[in-house]
Length: 279
Image 1 (cartoon, rainbow, N blue to C red):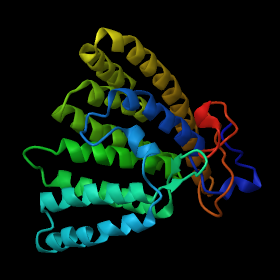
Image 2 (image 1 turned 90 degrees about the vertical axis):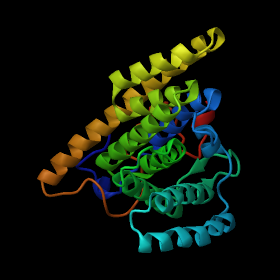
Image 3 (image 1 turned 120 degrees about the vertical axis):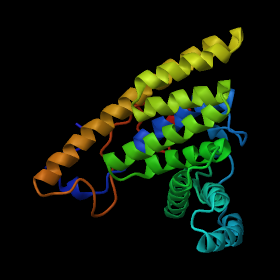
Image 4 (image 1 turned 45 degrees about the vertical axis):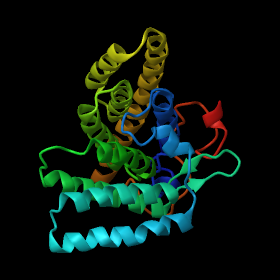
């Protein structure tokens, strides 16, 4: 059982900490080896490289204000919206919390705010219906969606963010259908629960892999598929419990944060900052 509805802790914020641990580990299994295909490094670089520099994050503020000023003149300026996507993702990466002993990153209030602004700017950009979508920005915002999924406080939000990551990465893969972009798409689709589409993306990635890469890619996809299935089970069960609680007049999330009601798909007793990732 993911959490006890009768427990005094039932009003604590639902945090997908262990789901996030598995998510980030799974993201590194493929992207760290084959690349994300977006031209700006892999998701592994985003997770384990940089971050934790609040001073550097303020360097983006002037550029963000400039892009926002352009939107006051033309709210549908696609280039200004793309600039905000990139700037907010980059700023959010700098605002991530970094464990000094492991180097592992986790979302903060500030990083979550910026990743959400990037996602909002991306949605606004899509509404402008440009002739050619930006694959680079799509790959960047897909990474932001992963961190939003990790910091989600309800099953519905986590599900929406995982699907947002998959939808954005699909655009990136369509623009540049490489081994990296397709294999990354496969893993995001597994996490989003679209197994059939993920299997197909995996096949397309394997078609672009060399003989020496095929075995590793096949093994990585199989492992990600397994972990993703466990995450999906957690999300689906939590969603049902949230609906049942809402129907009974309660809430599934809210109150004071604390405690993690989710089981760790990796079987570790550690959280995001613990030793589970290295096991």
